[in-house]
Image 1 (tube, rainbow, N blue to C red):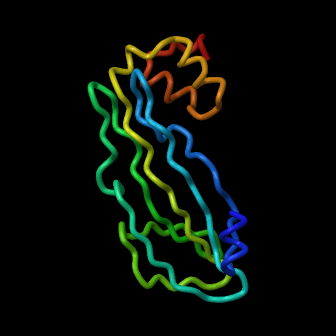
Image 2: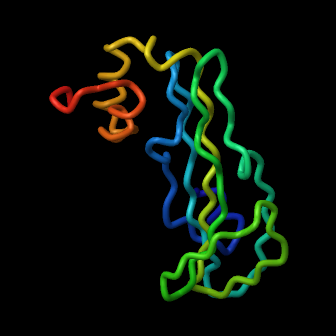
Length: 144
């Protein structure tokens, strides 16, 4: 973030992992990253190139797909507008922002083979919601 803000007249207002974005599996996929960036005191043009935005990153050997990536434009009034996969020439005014969400990775191996201790680690990490764990790993409500 510091490099972006030092080198360019941009402000990074958020940078973090996207919960529930990694594909379920014996070994779950890595999480995608969300960055929210906007121009400071000027207008600018945004161009982007995304991969795995239309098709989710696949899992292998029984693992499930990770979440797709996306670009979103957020207006000064907070209105969110999804953008194309490879947006070009998007005019942004000061106060507007672009949300860049990278895809999560696909899982490896069947989710039913994930170790209980690994599922506990996922729960404690806060990277996966109770609903995600319940839906993909057969965690019962009492286990949350």
